[in-house]
Image (spheres, rainbow over the protein chains, first blue to last red):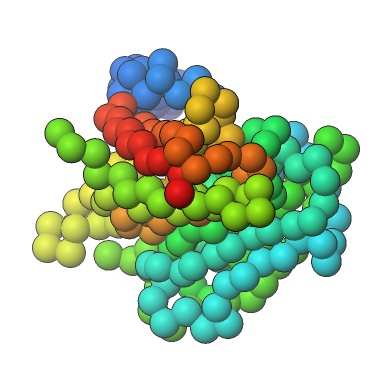
Length: 157
Length: 104
């Protein structure tokens, strides 16, 4: 009985070690180039964890100053046009989240001092869900959500 | 290799609007090959940097959730016709690409 447990433990730790090495080796080169790509935030499977990793907090305040332009119905979830803009001053970053995706955080835009808080891109949505925009200013996180109905999911194979 | 980033930049009333199209498969790593059932390895742009002259206007951090052949538009204050806009990206395999355009 004890032996059996020991075997399992050994196997388990060996396996974990191998995976660790593989991950380390595989990600080595991108990590050097992209020191600040927030891997944990992008791999998080829920919105709160992603925001905590990315911005240090998930305490967002809903604000009508954050405007999301996205279709009410997206026929093709693989290409959903999303535009986020706000008239709030001192915006540091804008993040876009598809609440229904396996990994909800889609993108985060860090704005330089001359940038106007406006970004427009196209995202993939796995299913009907809210598109959430989070605007980070010096002292708060403002958010808005817009439901988008997806007829054909964009993340399936 | 010629740049595969298309950039259009236009200034009006002191605000420059930049629109760009990149050519990239943006594979999430979550999809499976229909025939073999094997997962398709992730291959997507992780970071896009937009520069006006030597100033970074915007840095975009992306996941595979951005659509294939990504479209990106942003705006900034300043910019004059003839100024150079440079957009460059790096993907999760360490590949990179950059392109420039003049503001019109």
